[in-house]
Figure (cartoon, rainbow, N blue to C red):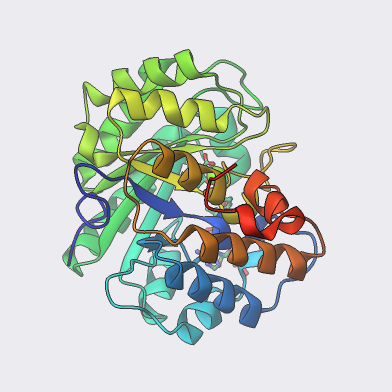
Length: 314
Ligand code: HMG
Ligand code: MG
């Protein structure tokens, strides 16, 4: 099986990791039926996304929106060549995920003790102790593994986060055996120079091909942050269709960089993604319709106004 750091985008391309069905839908107040989640994931894979994070096997007491994880995974018609990672917080989550047929998992912690206590009920050190057997068992079972480091550019509870803490946590996850480490600006507080400096520091400890970036767009900085990190050499970027998302334990955080807007920029830079932009925009409009709102992506809104202008001829 290809590891997340190897599948998808080539040297002249960028691997876009779609997180809308998880990061986005974990944050919706209204219940989204499993059938809608499944259709969203299938539309995204159909649009050419190489990685579509499908759901999360966290405690339903903590995130009721993801209580249907097994149903979603079981109901999915998986496309060959597409990876469908699922979030797993502990051994119980791993066991549920494997029973439901997951072959790719994503573990998560943060560079902030304060955020971890709110989000996963333990500090950084305890979270790494908790994750080690999860990673070991996942590897032994041949699962692909990605890991998230939240609060890489700031924390809603602690404030500033030292770059050294981001490096330390990312290095620990890489050493444990996670194939890819995604550096998350959970609350969209970073700006490009800070994002670049953080990535450069982490890349001293974990090789760039094993790193991804994950920007929330709370302050409108996400695309600029991605651009700075592309210049720094990253080639794996997380994004959320229609800009869905947030974290239920980071109040005020909004969605990730919108996949449509990201792909538009990447194609404009001559970076291949393998993604059909029109089909992606359509998927974003479709899920936004199901949620009763307009897409947060610029492209999704543009298409509603002038449907003939999605390919970038504006
Ligand atoms: P805890 O309460 O300390 O755990 O929560 P516990 O082991 O004491 O379990 C409490 C109850 O939950 C028990 O049930 C367990 O069985 C059950 P009870 O005995 O009371 O009936 N439980 C589970 N049930 C199903 N699946 C499981 C599971 N684990 C426990 N896996 C825990 C600790 C980590 C479980 C909890 O805090 C949790 O689930 N947190 C997840 C929060 C979350 O999902 N946040 C959003 C994802 S992170 C994110 O969005 C950031 C990211 O996008 C990157 C970025 O933007 O930075 C990734
Ligand atoms: Mg996130």
